[in-house]
Length: 253
Image (cartoon, rainbow, N blue to C red; front, side, top):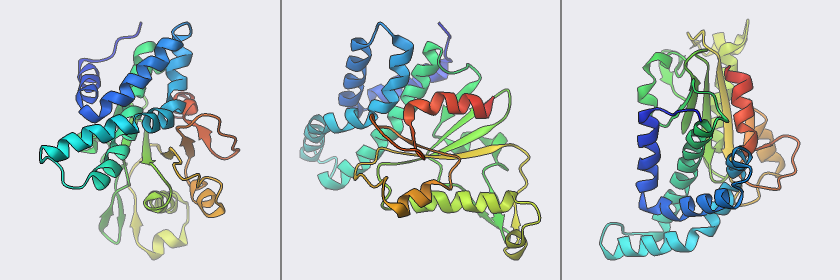
């Protein structure tokens, strides 16, 4: 079985140690146990079950929040709940990426991180200047290949209602910056110095079934790929999250 790094093992343990992650991780491990006869396929399919893991762990997370409020650690359960859902979603993707790598579904040269400050070697890739003012992407997770030096930004949103627009506007800016003989690039004095290939993708759990709204579909078409971490999705323009491993292999190798 492929070996993951010491840092990745620590990261797995760190994610598991977060109290509000316990219910979702427990459901994930149950799912993998039920499908242990096909471990590699199950680990990849687990991406599609993220919506299920989050919704089914709601009651246990609520109990955790009530205890934290009683201890004076939080003030507003409703607000904390919204924040936690986003964290759980992002952590589950990161956790599953590392576990997929551990089981051999992802190459050893591929890494994932939420700490963009650690990506100093990709600084020019992650910065666009508009009339000398730096612009940085809405960047929740970054996947990169140490061998090819290619990079993928993953913007993660529980719904499409609010911040999805921020992500696609940066992708549009990136396309303008990379365009040859672009009048818009010259008009706004856009400078992008990177020679490295950058992919910008979006993923959601589609809590409010917004994916079939024409306006939302229009936004998602700006990305290099869009994914839904939910099973039984019938869509021609959005991929199941289980396609993520193959996508990064094809694009970042």
